[in-house]
Image 1: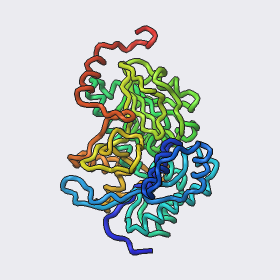
Image 2: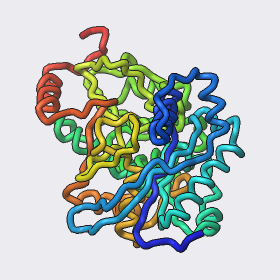
Image 3: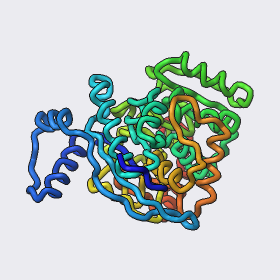
Image 4: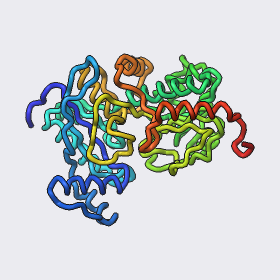
Length: 379
């Protein structure tokens, strides 16, 4: 293995669905001078099993105003989110192979996007030591982007957080517990949901000395009850499917769906009385083009979890993120400070392939004021 070069990052990710992997297969064919080909889903699933991790492309000389420049690479791990439960060993080996590729390429830090960090949970330190590369899930910057986006949106809507009811779906996870710790003394009511209420109780106990919100706990079978009562809903689950639809929200609800894949079924039809956006996404002063559609509005939008790796390459003193429940209030404030002090790194408001323009946001908020907070069936 070659010695690591300073200040180089790797963005490690995986396709979210079969169609995205189909795009990557054809990207590889084009690079090898083969024509595009339509593969049947059954064959593509087999290709998932056979294909090792691979470097997609280089990302040369990127950075922020006043930060200097670093190089990076994009590495693809061929697996689907639903495979993480049935092929744990094989998927883990593929992710480790992606980390090895990153180390050989001279990367000093690798950001584990999507479910790659979940699969490796508990093994990060051993693998980091083995390959001589820092690893981060990127969860702290993601949480920072989420809470800042919620604050910005609430302010624009004229919604006082101190009077608001917030639901966090997936609150026992790393990002969810970080968001809970941030908002537990800022909102009036906090409705927390997760698969196990016992895990939620651990989160509540962790922040009991800071909490001023009225807190209620729900299991995941009660998600619809919680979100129907909320003014603001944050989705940060590890579910790999849609779990609710837009029809499940009350009028005048702000919805930050920061799960990947997304948890809220939209189907391209937005409600004028529910503002929904893809949380944890940032806008950049440079392009990151992974070569295929990765579910973002443009190549200048990217996932906060991956951008944390870029920031750590630029600022090696920043702490990496991994594990569950390790986003302390102090650590979150550190990344909020970086986000607020980096003028060309901003929260992005997008949904699917659409980025809301300033004019669209103004129109949305103008119409919002005319809608009363009454049950949707009475509108």
